[in-house]
Length: 134
Length: 118
Image 1 (tube, chains in turn brown, purple):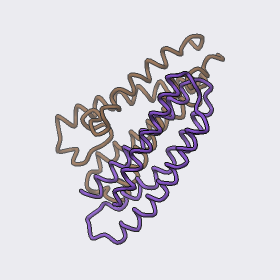
Image 2 (image 1 turned 60 degrees about the vertical axis):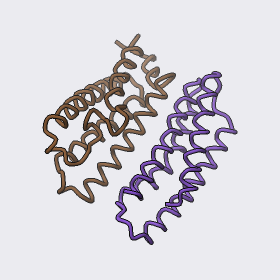
Image 3 (image 1 turned 180 degrees about the vertical axis):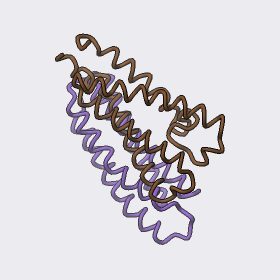
Image 4 (image 1 turned 90 degrees about the vertical axis):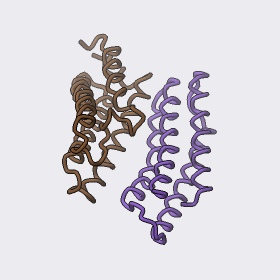
């Protein structure tokens, strides 16, 4: 069980740094959108807020690095992956529902497609550091 | 926006990022030189907040105030948190994490510039 700490060391340090930046960016973006122009695109802004919650959960769970938080991180990152794929697809299929960009619109195009790569790296990292915790 | 300050911030933070990447490549931890450089960047970010806010108040442009000030304020917490996060790591990956934090600054500055000229 002592190995759970591995989640936040080595390459995990960089991974969590990226997660932290997205948590901060998504949270502040959603906060400003909802506070100043919510009626323009409520669906997109609610999704922005949901993405922000997921990023915060993943960041703190990975950084906490306990056996329990690893499970929380796994759930958060799976939701993140499903979210970015679903929102990415819907933003192409029904662009009228997305008058303003969310983090996950067009598979994270506005963020250099990092949002679609990040959950994959997160899952790989959780698997890589799983030794001894399962 | 006061362009010289913006571009100076882009250049300084990219230099800091390269510094951090070199340290990571050499398997070294972050050092006082890098932290000093980040201190200079942080002071410039503080100046940018003051200058940017003053210009926002005085401009006739249709700049999105909440986003503009949000980026100005948000940019201040990136490097301190990144430095603390990097210092807590005893391997080269600390420098790598700090390189990522450094990369955020030019991105934020470009966004600020885009919001201003939009």
